[in-house]
Image (cartoon, rainbow, N blue to C red; front, side, top):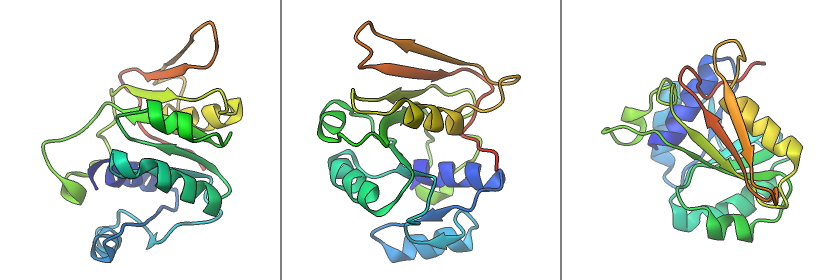
Length: 173
């Protein structure tokens, strides 16, 4: 889709091997042909997995991905309360990029979509600090260019990451 495709493009442009899956195999094949992903399917050894499904499917997909991979997992859904209450794995941190396009699906997947966008991370009390840091590093890289601000409530059950202008979904290998 739009957000997953944009994330995949941004990571691929930075040298990451990106895999992707969809319930519609023709979308996976199209993403491969477009160079958005290297190959279809979930990678059990993935360092990070972004779950980009409709909100009502998020909890089940996040649980499945956590069971089938070794790395950290985040999502891009707009609703967090029920999801973060349901997932108690320290490798999960909820996320929501405040970005989009008037285009739909892979046709609108633009690697620069997240530049200057706010991307909020909403971990639960179960989220490991290392998970939060790993996902934050994927979102905001380059201290000289992008700046990030992390704020916490007194109870430390809510952490927030805000990417300021100039930042993007990036990674270094």
